[in-house]
Figure (cartoon, rainbow, N blue to C red):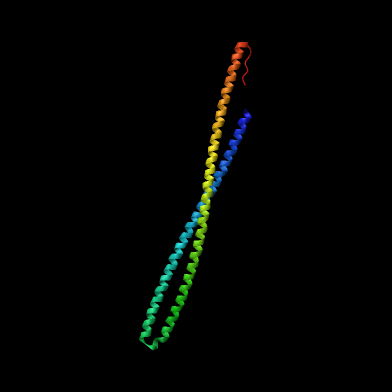
Length: 185
């Protein structure tokens, strides 16, 4: 009877080790989720900062362009003597437009990269969530199985005690009839 109990204890010990390993896997997955969430927040913050920076820069450039166009119109109406000034202002306006177009292109490229990165991070978070849900279900099943095995072991031990008590009682009863010594297992 002791061999069966040792086997049960070994199985329980193996199940407990397995549960601890699964628990460590869950903790690692949770740490990974926390890491990716922090990365996601950082990317979102960086995205917001870049958007605000480029918006401000675009507003300044548009405002400067608007002002240059107004100055250009005023200068043309004043006289031909200021034609050189107007050409210079026109050149500045062209440079600003090119700079503005270049900044807009960079901003759109950054937005595209950030959106792609956010999509990848979102997919990874979904994968981690699925893995975590599966692991939680497996741990729950193993916990239930372990509890059932412990209950079966307790029932078997109770049954063994009952059988031993019955055997002792029978030996005593036989000893009282035969007058011999009783032996207890």
